[in-house]
Image (cartoon, rainbow, N blue to C red):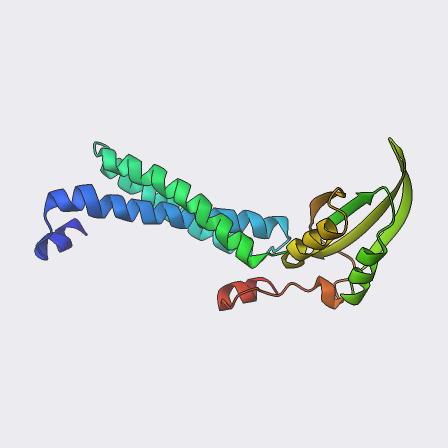
Length: 200
């Protein structure tokens, strides 16, 4: 590649201190982003797409580390590698948030029933369980529900608007028994054919 660029008039110094570090940076962003998505798909039981992503993650990493060894005396390569790792982490988290893949279990604990919240959940066809319990300071109300991750923010905002002191916990759910329910279906939040296929 270096010889090809030199035929185009690119100097060796420009290649070593700008082009090569930039390529290493981009490669590292790619493989770390893929790693984040691969872990997300693994946690959600997507057995078909996770190995596919793992293959390209390893391939890109080998290309990046190979260039590091070829330019071991170039400090810009190290900076590009580290910078790509940090940027790739951010990019992977951004795509993970946008995909909003999977489901979550939400527990809401309040000192009294929340009829407005229950009505809100019925209107949106959420499946839930509402039971009474005993807390440190007396009787409490416990509400359990499983929902798509892309519905989580709206639900939490609703809980806080009804009772700002409500205590809630959120956990990832790998699989549910009622996959035929519309409320459980995973649908992409933005159009990308690759990820749309991966979510089915």
